[in-house]
Length: 157
Image: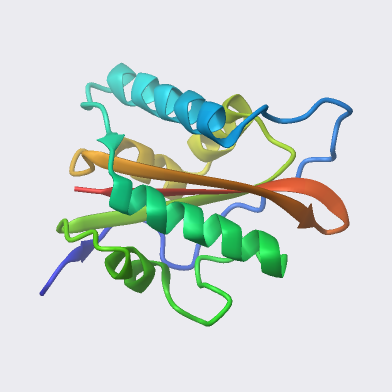
């Protein structure tokens, strides 16, 4: 099956933020919901339709966030070397368009969006009109010696 890969392959933003005393978010479901709302609000500002939750993309994103946190590795490739595109397909997503954004640090949904909007490849994924679905993964861990959240957003269409 032939598919189009939009956006990132090896480009990502290192979003390490010095930890604050407050926790970045209270729960993974609350963070997912807040980030999806912010993404859809941003898309609406540019005349793009909303992205809706895809359980397959969410499973792919969550598995990758878990893997990065366990291995303290920030990369689009898994700890076994699997690419992000292969990982998304492994979890059963079959849409023609796929993309991925990552972030790491003691971040809020607002901070993640701020970083992604400032990065041309991440911004392109956020505004890609082909994307209709999203899965968001988040897992706490340590990165560069600091408490951090590993965030994965997988897009599809």
